[in-house]
Image (cartoon, rainbow, N blue to C red; front, side, top):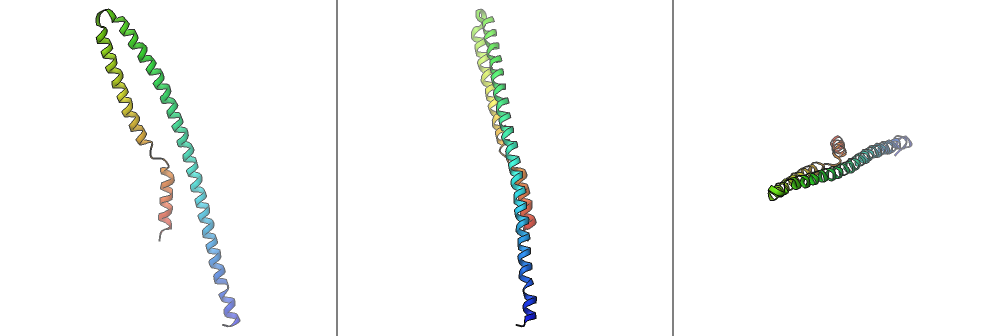
Length: 132
């Protein structure tokens, strides 16, 4: 191999190394952006979950107290004439409302299980773009 051939052969590996280094830098930058998106989504979901729990707790507390006092008030008013009817109606009402609340809670819980959809979608698109 002559000296001129060696001079022409040397730039090719250097170009490949530079291209590989550029590709790795792009991959690291893309990964950093995706991780930042993942962090933002995690923070949003955590805050939304805490807000949901606090709002649910306050709602349950105040509605429970209100319904309890209403049940006591009406039972006392009907004590002489229809006390068993009043107690039966309120027991049925509270158990029905509790069951409905339980079903709504389960539905909400299942809907909230789809965390990080944006991050997963972006990673899926990245994979499609990078596949040959």
